Image (cartoon, rainbow, N blue to C red; front, top):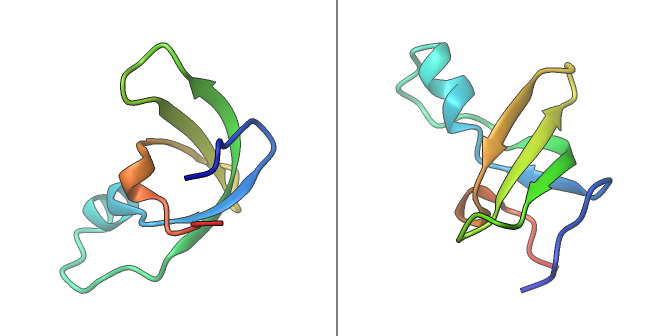
Amino acid sequence: MPDYKVGDQIMFHDAERSELLNLTAPVTPAVGTITKVDADDHPPKYTVQREDGSTTTLGRSDFLTQE
């Protein structure tokens, strides 16, 4: 698996947005840019900025991007 860093653009499952909107159907994958990597956490956590400017914290299991 690649090492992701600040500035990388990824596609991810936006479970937080799905819960916020109270959706039962799957959400279309979202695109975002990594703005922070918490490498001290195991596994690492990533702060990702969505295209609308909001942010969410993700783990690698949320990523769809697998380069």
